[in-house]
Length: 87
Image (cartoon, rainbow, N blue to C red; front, top):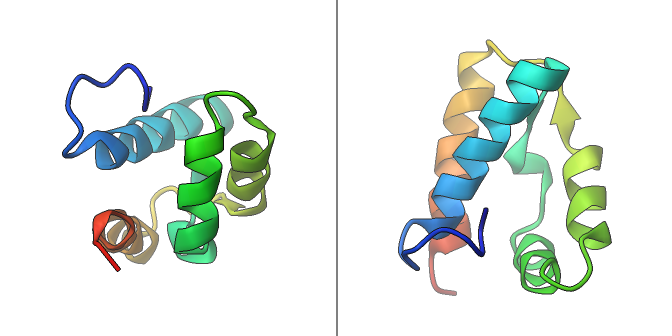
């Protein structure tokens, strides 16, 4: 999804929302984004076009069944913007 999304701005946020929706529907889980280090995530995303294992491992380690938890949802939004910010 990250590669197919036509715009650079918002690309990561869109992919994370899309991924969480798929995981909720198919697995009854979502990603607790607060458990994923920014640098590790961004590095894994860059590599994901040629090697999806690092990003899969990060995401699997951060899965939670708190799909209806407001705090988890809001942390996901906050972290989505945090990942996009310049250091």
